[in-house]
Length: 99
Image (tube, rainbow, N blue to C red; front, side):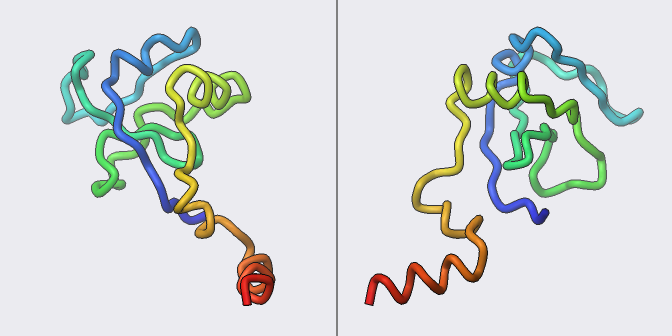
């Protein structure tokens, strides 16, 4: 799946998840609570949404993690961007219905 949306959070908010673990590249130092990180629409966490070659900080995507993101962090795809996740066939049907 192509990633289309991410949202920034302070790391201290994500560290409240009971099964939180972190991975970081060898050249990076440990991240502070105030470090800004990004949750992608696939629920992986990265340090930068632009520099993807460093890999994720967190990629243990479980139903519990997704629930934590939705309930505690209020992470969701904004309504005005949800069209980007629709199947092309659904988009065409929606256009036809609007006419």
